[in-house]
Image (spheres, rainbow, N blue to C red):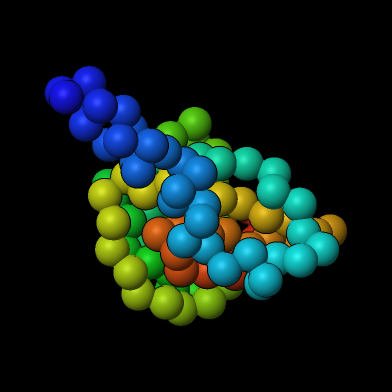
Length: 107
């Protein structure tokens, strides 16, 4: 019985179930280019661990030390959430915890 519960818990916590929370109608014509974990933000030149949504110009830092710049405002909070990154040309959309964010590459 214990093993069954562990298997069920793993299935519920898998990235596939997290992606299922994203309304994929918003990215028809986009390509899923990466799944990464958000570990920090940089705002006003200061880096802070954690994720609390986007604000204009905020930089989201991923576990692999890559990053994107937010292009909109939307508050949300999560600890080390998975980010599903979709792209079409230079247009980037990111789904985190079922919420969508517009972003830009950092030059």
